[in-house]
Amino acid sequence: MALAALAEELTAMAAADHELAVTGAAHSDDPAEQLAWRRLTARHGDRLNEIMDEVGWPTADLVGEDAARAAWLIAQHADRQLDVQRRALRLLEEAVRAGAAESRDLAFLRDRTLVNEGREQVYGTQIAGVRGDGSPIPWPCAEPERVDELRAGVGIEPFAEYVARYS
Image (cartoon, rainbow, N blue to C red; front, side, top):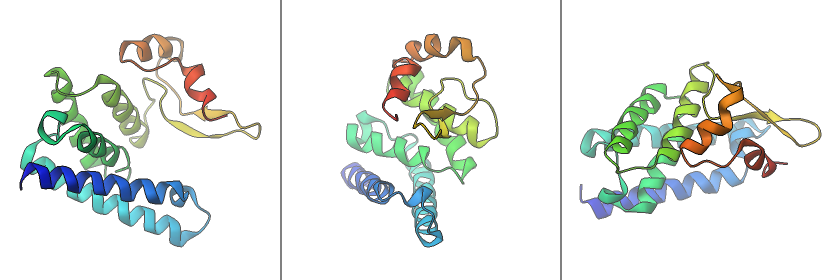
């Protein structure tokens, strides 16, 4: 597949993801909306897996910034496809080590994958819910006392600033 076509496909997938996400379909009370979200993310996860077969991790050098960001988003939302998420995590780790991807993106995907495996997250990027007062509830962290230090190491703002956006 030509890289320009691949870049276009990835960005279109991310746009479709965003369009459905802003409707709240993933967390809707309507089972039909939830099912539409699951179908979309499963289809995109399957396609990302094929793309990883073809090119490995689609880095910005390979497909451009927007398409690389789209691939990361698709991996983030492959919550019911742990095999795809784990594979994306491994390939993204390699890309970060090679200087071809952002450690910040890796941190978010690592936390997402850990939570989906039923484990404690590292960076506190994943929010489990929202309290009645509007304050977010993060999934448990392995080292809560070090979260801000760990976040700073990968270029993520302090936890308090991050959650203030949700309040």
